[in-house]
Length: 239
Image (cartoon, rainbow, N blue to C red):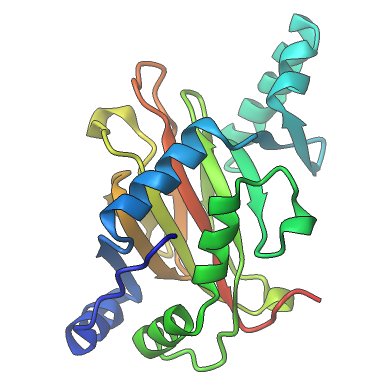
């Protein structure tokens, strides 16, 4: 059974969050739970490659992408990187997580349990109290995987129809070097870089959806994979 480790020093955490509507919470899961989730992401989760080409989001499972002729694979990557050179697009592994197992039967049970805990009243109360968004009712979630060559260009996470309020990135990357890329990079409104948060293990990065941010390019020489559970705390639950 997974167990969260919600911090209790709310006055201090709220003060830190309100400095720039961002906070990196450490040790959000009990250690054994974090290790269980990391193992599930690394060995039991089927990922699809998410990317944006031809003016539309695309999804290809690992096997589907590998089965394409080399020329077609090269064409896809050329389009992805051409878009990225203009500040558009992404390439990373994704797996939708839902607290209802029937929605995604290939999701490991432990990830379903994690999504249920993200939507528990104790987590909802923590996020509402921390951020001041009293209307938060739901947390969406996906497993993400960044391997060498993956990236997410600069954007914000505002989607009014979903009522997104606060984005989160829960890290499950035990070893990472700052030269490998894959950082959660924040930007000023004029496009200049602020600071970046390196991939970590058992943390939860929280930030207001209005923040411009990106995941920087993972270098070809990176010796690890950046795993996380990401999503948004939202005012509007799914239908």
